[in-house]
Amino acid sequence: MSEPLQYRSTRGARHAARIEDVIAAGLAPDGGLYVPEALPQLDASDFDPEGSLADTATTLLDPFFRGSSLARELPAICREALDFDVPLRPLAYRDDASVLELFHGPSAAFKDVGARFLAACFRRLRRDAEAPLTILVATSGDTGAAVAAAFHRQPGVRVVILYPDGRVSPRQAHQLGCFGDNVQALRVAGTFDDCQRMVKAALNDAELQQRVPLSSANSISLGRLLPQMSYYAHASLAWWRDHRVPLNFIVPTGNLGNALACVWVRDMGLPVGEIHLACNANATLSDYFDGSPYSPRPAIATLANAMDVGAPSNFERLRWTFPHDHELRLQLHATSVDDDTIRETIVRHARDHGEVFCPHTATAAHLLDSMSVTGLPWAIVSTAHPAKFDSVVEPLIGRQLDVPPALQAMLNRPAHAEPMAASEAALKTWLQQHQKSIDTVTG
Ligand SMILES: *Cc1c(COP(=O)(O)O)cnc(C)c1O
Image (tube, rainbow, N blue to C red; front, top):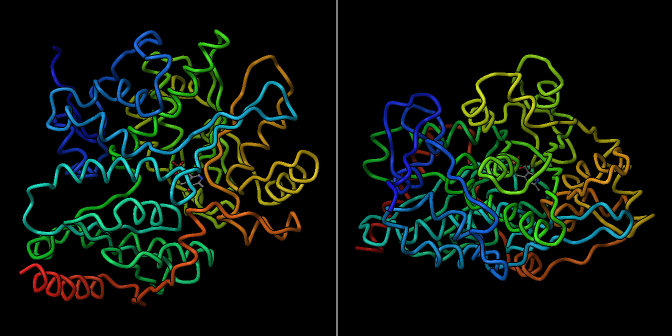
């Protein structure tokens, strides 16, 4: 048996870490992002052609977990996390293209995959822990709902979600506030950046951590990134078996977590062809891949709000893998799509093809539209169900959308969020007071 894979921080290669610690910690102690020392190499013939998505995930992730305390339970973790469909559906209007639908999980966005995998790992890593763990999440919408759904009613864990009051869609706000039990939503009188600052301050507060054990579930956690590779592997392997050519992907992109998973699957030797990033008006990545120096900037608000990122955190992981610009620019293409084009794409596809896309997926659909038929097979990645963004989509297409049952169940429950000032001190006080009530209950 080979040695366990080691993990390093993108900011300093001195300390090696084990996968259990990497997943529990989220961020590396030096503020960097964890990366595997080397990507394992696999071949199409390593995978069971009849296998489910969870089976593909188990084969793919096994080398990342080998030798760890989670290794034996990896098949069960994959089965628990990936228990919904991720279909690759042909697009009727174009015979060189399909859509990879990632939105059939409980919160109707692809972030369910990472959040559910992380929850399944924490369930095992925290089995013998004495104090309950509080998971803090700052969210501009989709992350909070996915993490809340994944950890709801999980013993030994409490989730506290911070979101900017009035800056998420009414339906997103309802999703965040509807869980109750061990999930608490705080609506912060400020911006998403304020929420992130408050969470970071709490996580870095040693005195607070003594009394309130804290962790985070943000999108830079490797425990969310690794399982996202599964659907790219599963779809591209199925395509390869049927057609003997690699499948090419167009990925709606914000923080680059979803797209990086696709890049890693290709680097592991699996049959993925070109990868195009579809960005909204936040043009940091498209400028860079067009040849400008990398220049992160403040985010601007767009219709595809889950991609409103001006400083994509996972760029640091790409840079670590490809330190030279000319090498990195060979890996990916990126295009920025403005709000008018998003609107026009949603309207036209609904009218001409009967395809209703969420604003994020519409950026990818636009990139596909702008490519002529080349003989290459393309998959556009659909990151959320359009009904999640009803306030954008319904007025454009002039009708109401059917709501998936899991989302409807959330909307039927009452929702509650506590107001909070945009201040680190307010969050600290709140966490301490609530810890007291937990300690009283659990004795
Ligand atoms: C989070 C999100 C994205 C962006 O994904 P990244 O991994 O941040 O690039 C795109 N679409 C939807 C619907 C999302 O929730």
